[in-house]
Amino acid sequence: MKRVIKPALVIIAALLIVVFLFISNKSVTLSSDQKKIRDLWGTPEQFMITYLPRGEQELVRFEVWYYPKIGNKVSFLAGKLASNDPYQGDVVTATRLIPEDFDFEQNEEDVKAVLGNSKPVESLDYLPAFYEDSGAKTFYSEESIFIIESDHLTYFQTVGAGDKSAVETELQKLDVTPTPATQTSELKTYTSSDLGLEMNYPVEWFLQNGVLSSYDTGYLEKGLPLPDQRIKCDFISYSETDVSQENPQTIREGDVVIKMGTAKDNSGLEGPGLGAGIIFVINDNTHKIALLCYDYAKDLEAKLFQSLNTFKFLN
Image (cartoon, rainbow, N blue to C red; front, side, top):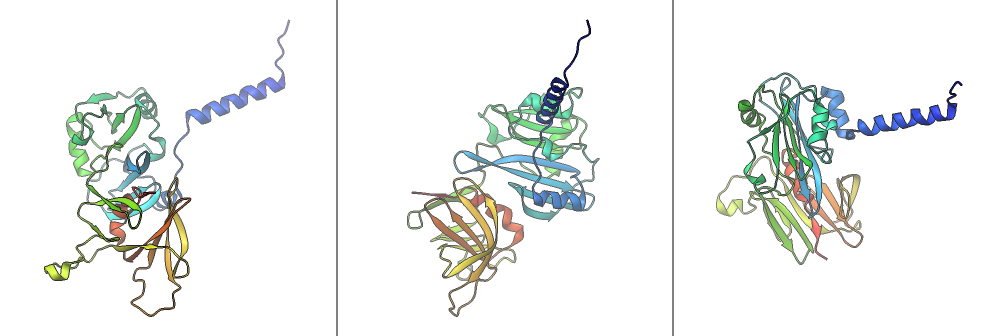
């Protein structure tokens, strides 16, 4: 007796196969900023991915894309363009790998599957000092170095080396120091009960009385030079009666939402103006505050974004 397969069953089976393939091959979605860079320069010749703390329990993805042939490297924080800098690294064979195939949720076996199970992956006796006692492990393949911490991919970097002994050298050439998911490096903490906020900021920056600056604002009294590239911003109460925000772009979502835009002076008062006129509006369900920047250097934007990703209201 012939076996008859009903059309409906064939369709269901086909759909299941499609769903399985979609899940098996899912990848990180590129942001609009990343798509623009990819359309302009193509996929990166080499790249690095790590995860930075945002608040106490959240992580934010940080990526650096390298284009040695044209002398550029581009950084992204949570998919947003953070910096575009000159890069003097060696020209190496472009990787076949792409950033969107790697994600925090992957474990060792997941990463191996993306690399290709036929390619050997070995443990590497190399771990940055700030990963000690975290249970992290470093792995090496002929194309990459990556770190797995608590069954999560917390660091991934392509390399142009062909043997283990060259891996550390390659890391130094690419000018990247891995940042573990459990620690923010080289940041100080600022707490203000008057403003009701807490935020980390770079150790070489200054944050006093609600004024954040990348340089010592007492430079005149101390006889210090004023740097050409600088950031200076004030935390202010946000009221559209005085200053409003135009063309806002969200740079942080979640419990605290931060939008970056252009500041418009609505006060009608004469004064020195708003300078660079960059304003960050920060709010949750209860509070709203703004960070108004009078000096704003794009080269320092990545550090400012890293600081803003640690922002929290105290009450």
